[in-house]
Image (cartoon, rainbow, N blue to C red; front, side, top):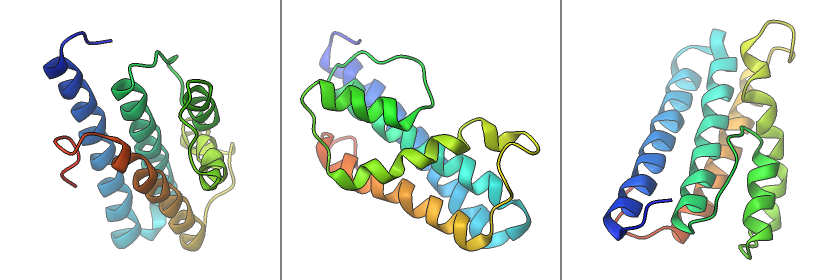
Amino acid sequence: MPRHDSELISAVSQWVDKAEMDLRASRLVLDHDSSIVGVAAFHAQQAAEKYLKALLTWKQITFTKTHDIGLLLETLNRNGIALVEDLRKTIILSDFAVDSRYPGDIPELSNAEAEKIYQLALLVKHHIVPLLPPIITKA
């Protein structure tokens, strides 16, 4: 974990910037190419994961290298950061981290299903961003 405030701010900012890029990529796919909505779901999962890792980094909580949303939420909870129960439903996003990139692992999504996955990523963003320092969260 970074020791100096500027290093910590920089690390958290990088997580948030990457999360924002994934969220935008997901939205672009949903809006412009319904033939690849699985890609939108993948980027939505990645955004949610990175927002959670931004908060873990900000709170200086060590976390393992994982794509498991449930594990990240549990790590926050174990360290005294109890997030709204609503975020429990975002655990389904983990299915789209790796498995969605390979044929046959997850059934193809409809546009409506992919939109729901995107909305779950937004839910994570809306719960996490207020917990981060304002200097980082300009979005």
